[in-house]
Image 1: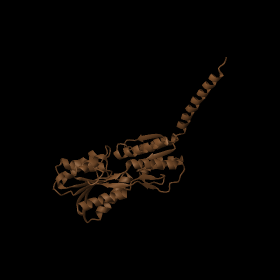
Image 2: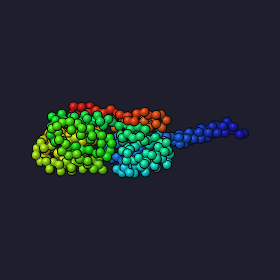
Image 3: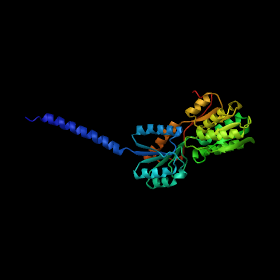
Image 4: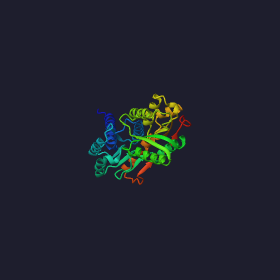
Length: 313
């Protein structure tokens, strides 16, 4: 006799497996595609942005592609065009938007939302998620001015090619300019291919050699931590740590925190919530992909000043 019961059970199992396979296929096919593009993945801060973004993207089930152009800003335009051709649902950039306008225009023409992750505000961006660079620069430069009692030569490390960092330099210039007895003796733009430590050290060594007198340099203000670390290394190698040269940075990355905890020349930095910026960026691009209008062109994530008093917290 034909075992109809067995046949039915086999059919049910087959149909169940087929439906499961189809559901997995459909889920993968319908997953929103998001591309993140940055030339700065060698930077510790950018790595943490991406970590935070990845965590949120995983929760949302996105098909995520991280692209590192390894310092090549112009290549970002090509990578945006590639993403548009791949019909992604959203694009995130970590680069000066004014330098990649051609790529942003291609994305806009395809109605693909683009969000900045610590990049800079631009009409072609839905929004930019970042820390408040104005506040961070003001807090650290005022810290320097107070520590050196409003007088002395200050060395600045800046990077005007990247808007979030350029902002910091502008504010620090204004703060130091408000103290008649503070002189900005040099405004250095280091090579950032390796993050900025090596070239900052070399440039600081040259400056120390040109100014050998004790007390000739009162402080070093750096727009991010790597130049501050390079300057600290140069000061230590020159045997001038005991001159009391005050060093501050911005980012409070692990190497900077370690230096601050030693109680030496590197006294302060600003802790950005890099992972939080990445998470907030993911939420912003998610809202944009859902069709929500984001009215604020800049979304700020809170920061905190780190000194020896709270570096261990």
